Image (cartoon, rainbow, N blue to C red; front, top):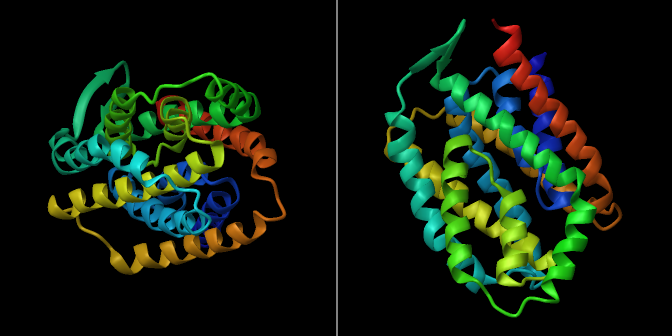
Length: 271
């Protein structure tokens, strides 16, 4: 029964990506862990593949409309590709299974990933809840900026690469503001460019898992992906009629609740 709910959630993940241009991927790891029964660390690898593949589908629509800045994406990817690959191939396998103990809580590698992911969900949720105010601030700032800050774009790229590699999330809530503030891209072009960056980052990160010998259940993974891709195709169609900006705050509150649930479940209820 949980698996059926998990496949329905995969459709919802793709749907939200198609309508809002981001956000839905933050739910991929929790769905894989709590509904599909995949271990947290392996879920981050699966999430990279699912997020990367669905973002390819989403980015193609923006690319056809001319809403992707390839030069900016290449600058961003110059550092993020290296950091995401190194994180998946070397950092993740190097982390020991058991890290330390705080009171009655034993911090394992799986617990560390879930806690880090839950914190990321809370931060991303805050960004989505305040999306309208944030877009107004970014747009206003865009009109006053005249210098493209390549150094900051490269720096954010490296940070996003590590973040993507560690928790298996795209990091669009960090990428889009960076593209608007530091690369002076219009919001819609920033969203399209962000999807391209997320797609390439995630899939390159997944190759790090493959080269590190991570076992992949391809039948399950491709089946899960098919539901997510179906969702993003439907979401892209519905985006013509449903404004994503209106859905982001509601989705943000849902993500906040999910992140809080994970923190309570892993750090409080299990003690």
